[in-house]
Image (cartoon, rainbow, N blue to C red; front, side, top):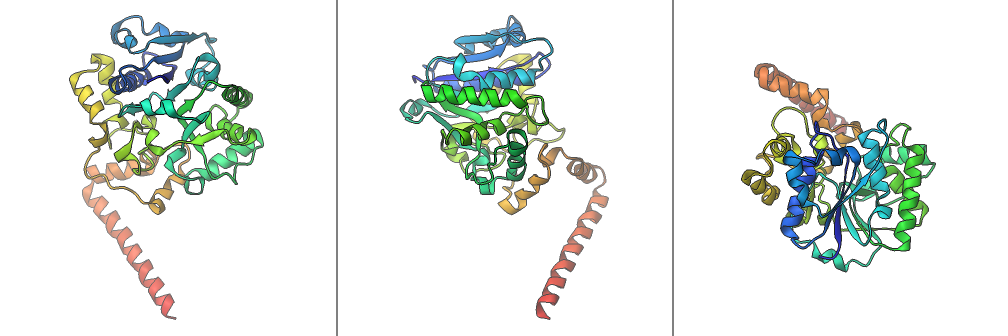
Amino acid sequence: MKTKIVYVLASLDADIYMEQAFVSAWSARHYNPDCHIEMVCDQDTFATMKSGIRGQYKSLFDTFHVQDFRPEQSMRERSRWMKTSLRKLIEGDYLFLDSDTVVCSNLSHIDDYNFSIGMALDQNCEMKDFLYRTGVTNRTKRLFNVDISAETKYFNSGVAYVKDNAQTHIFYKKWHQMWMSKRYENDGIKDQASLAATNLLLGHVITEMSGDMNCQVMASIQYLHTAHIMHFFNTFFTAKGPSLHPFYGKNLFLEVKEQGITKDIVHKILQCKSLFISPSVPVPFEGAKIWELYSKRNIFNTNAWITLQYIHQSYPLVFKFIEYFITTLIRFRRRCKRYISKL
């Protein structure tokens, strides 16, 4: 495999981002033993890899590009600065991977890609079906005065194939400038609004990659069976209680922090497509639209959901009454509709 794999990381001892990157890099190395893996990180992150478990797994990466930041710059700002600057920091073609990904197969086919920049669609769907389309459209307009409402594609920046050519250097320079200009405004720290604005302004440089290169199973299971790369969005699923999948919780990565990548962790990495709990029922589009109500956090982390879980576990009779009451209302509504339709 000639294309490099690159990670961006800003992490402290207290979080699990580095442990996520270790798991992802281990999976990439397992399926692509000849690949060259590089990490771009800040000076404080690099300092945590001098000893212990973090020092042990430093060997997963062939090259480090350490960037210096001021103490007052947050880890989130550092991460986005490095991500939007990546093209000027790395030589050669590369595949960027978010740390909350798991590689599931050999990736050598990407050496044959002939486009300049490739990304998969966010939520693995067209813009018209994108659950947060109203929010991202309004945000891009508010921050950059760029109207993406007519766009058919909105890309996820968590996996990105990038060639080393003049076009990609121009694109990344513009992306970084746009992100920098609004990074301290409300939601400006996020990188995808500036990405969408840049792509539109520069004439749609990004080519759509297949969803199996960035299977975002949180939103769609369409590419689960063929996925080359799983993207878990771990930060959405850190609430207490049973987890849909081990990679959606913190415990697996806390184990890596304490014990390293054990045989049990290796098993979970290699079997990651089949570790979802059962039952785990897919939600069709109309049901999933409720996510639009929660643009900043997943429904499973909302007070309404947590309260229902608590009532179900602690007061089953109360929960049965709530369920009976709601069911009765639904039946009453259906009867009313039938009655009205006959008038």
